[in-house]
Image (cartoon, rainbow, N blue to C red; front, side, top):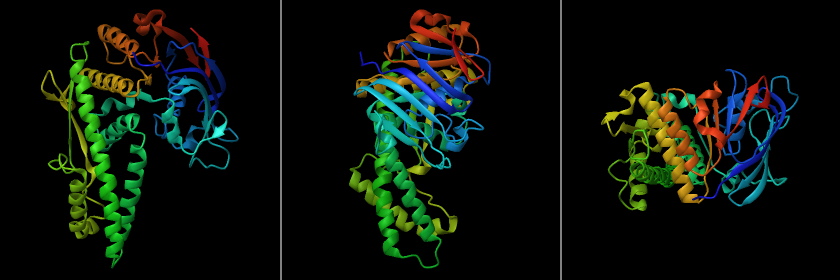
Length: 375
């Protein structure tokens, strides 16, 4: 059984519709119920800021601060984490203009928000992800990269550096007579970073497929068959240096084409994650809404299990409006799977009765107009 990571205290200040709240927790799962617009998802979003990035809404930081607040927002959490007890404080300050946020660990400024991954991993599933299988490929890449980041803390930095190098190459190609040596240097950087990204994604898909296969008989959730297409599909079995040479050559050969298009047409930024319903042998995009939800839940649970296995610490799970599209049997199976992961999970819904199968494994809180009370 992996070690349990829990949030014991949570404080918010000027966060969305919360002026100031302090919440003490006891290590059990947490169920937040209340009317739509009460602030349930806002609380989940605050917890998602205990991971790198812009949270589960991918919001501009200036939009996160409570309307009318004089400064920015702050989130504080006391966590029994992967390296022991830790106090985490993050947020923005007046003058940041929503462009960045600060992070303190035990009161000391952190070098980077990536240090959060040393203490806990946060995984979420939200209603906005329900269209993952039918939406644009960019959504699936973003979903995939979040999965990779939970296991490989360097993945986010590689992706950011790749994007920076690609933007530099695109700007250079727009010039009348671009410097070929500068182009070659940028393309070499893109090749190293892009291939590392592609191999990390491929490894994650392979590991996740193993977890999905092992849990096929563990409950009523369908199995997902995953594959990646769109970037050196026939070459990723070769040694990394050979793949880098291949991609660098593709970039060099495609300079005139990319200059005419105004963008780079080959690379890991063009990859798509394909998902099929194994039992029906059907593309996920063609499945019913309920089947798509069940597939997505199964994938997220499998990923949480993979993170627990690889890190020996169960992740913190955020399941927003999780009961939607799930019948009573699947809800009960979900709660058993979540509990079996050995971690702490936060769940939201409008009706407390939907979580009856959890029993005393969870603490039940009611959210209303920026306040939280025991149910």
